[in-house]
Length: 82
Image 1 (spheres, rainbow, N blue to C red):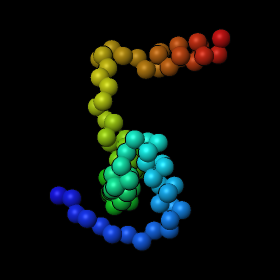
Image 2: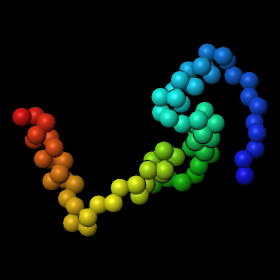
Image 3: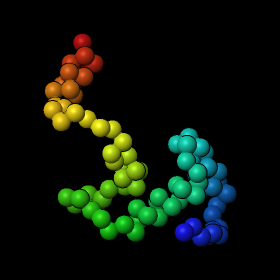
Image 4: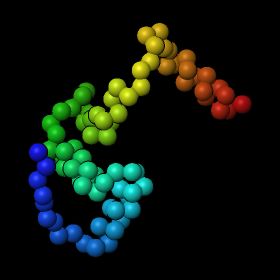
């Protein structure tokens, strides 16, 4: 359930945050919600906190069971540096 929140923030900070949100195609409300969620989240994996953005991207791409990311990355680097 969403609840309205009123904040007092420096005008310059708001303008910069709006520009950042526009550039990343996300609403300012969602940006702030994600930030607050990342601050209050206690879930950690191997000592590293998983950000809301990374959580939202989990499962976006399906790979074949035999996908070898090391081989693919090695091939990418070889092509890049030729």
